[in-house]
Image (tube, rainbow, N blue to C red; front, side, top):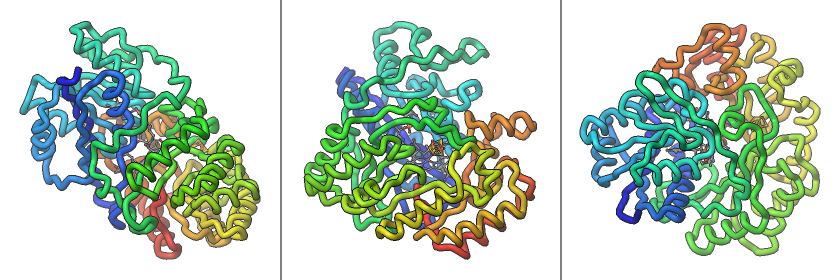
Length: 442
Ligand code: B12
Ligand code: SF4
């Protein structure tokens, strides 16, 4: 299929705010780099990546023209909820300019709102894990067969949206090819707050067995945890350092130390092989041990991010966090003692949050005194349990572009499940950002 062009697109973040934007942070599009790599290796498709986070565009016509300049047969768009309206508008403009192309969408937003995701102009959606489903869809379409049997596919049948069965998850993640970083300019990906020079991302495992009510991990990964081997992860790091010349990395696992032994082993391999990298991880506070903290620090961990979420025990219980304030205290104390920088994140506006509980959260942040603290306003994303609460309360309009764009954590309240007004939630966030040294740690 070397002559069949597939263009992968990350729509821009057109949001008025966003902490990373204020700081000039651009993260790499790991998911489309993985998808492109997979269909290129297994299907020999000719793949191109267009990242509108790194390309200046002022209109959807600009975007459509840039994508169509690549002469694609298939256009694959990755989707986060706040960017979905732009993705749809771009898809419709592309179809207006070139009705012959096939537009496929996938990613957390489509997976969480499969029933409503297929707007005019979008031919197909893929839900859940994308690699095998996308390859099968492309192969099926290329061979002229109808795609209605492709697992994980969503498609239109007249006015109805059909959602096909889910395929099993990929058993052995070590078999995935490394991301197709050769398809992009690595100098574009910067984060001056954390790294000097460019940075890339690695995932060493998919999914999280926990079930926090606000978290969208369950939407795509269904609480199944799959881990790559220490060997395979180290191979990828070695490739990034030695072949791509990048030494700054972010591990984008939902929770890096889901298996403490494996996490420690990865750190020890980085040390043994003298890979000399600087990297970041997200870890549950209850996963830390002295051994892991030392291994993280000695292998170049620039910071470890923990989700504290609330300073009120009852709320912690209600959101299914399964961690207590004393566990957060212990973790932060141990990290500080070991000189491992820690970032703690908090959510304002959780279900049941009152002025008192929000103040408790802010006081707890002061008490923990992490190296950095960040405060997000609750955004119930499709497929999460807080989204179900919002649906039950009649607060969701699944086709409202305005609501999707406002599901953004910062400076906006799209759906309020707390006992506090929208204005007050935003005021608390502003106050928190004035009071604490904050940064977007995602
Ligand atoms: C890195 C990251 C970011 C980066 C880059 C994300 C990107 N893709 O561009 C940045 C900083 C930009 C970011 C921003 C946000 N993020 Co974010 N982010 C992540 C994180 C940590 C890793 C993403 C990743 O690469 N995962 C690994 C890949 C392999 O998984 P994946 O992206 O889901 O892709 C697979 C499938 O979804 C599918 N797929 C994906 N795209 C496509 C496209 C096609 C065509 C097909 C067929 C398949 C397909 O195939 C892939 C491989 O199997 C995830 C958590 C996580 N661990 O996944 C959150 C996550 C994706 N983010 C999330 C959120 C909420 C946000 C924000 C909305 C939050 C905010 N701060 O406002 C913002 C977006 C703001 C905006 N206005 O646009 C949610 C998603 C919720 C949602 N419905 O959108 C997640 C899941 C976190 C969570 N657990 O709740 N994020
Ligand atoms: S917030 Fe963290 S621990 Fe909770 S479900 Fe999401 S990834 Fe897992």
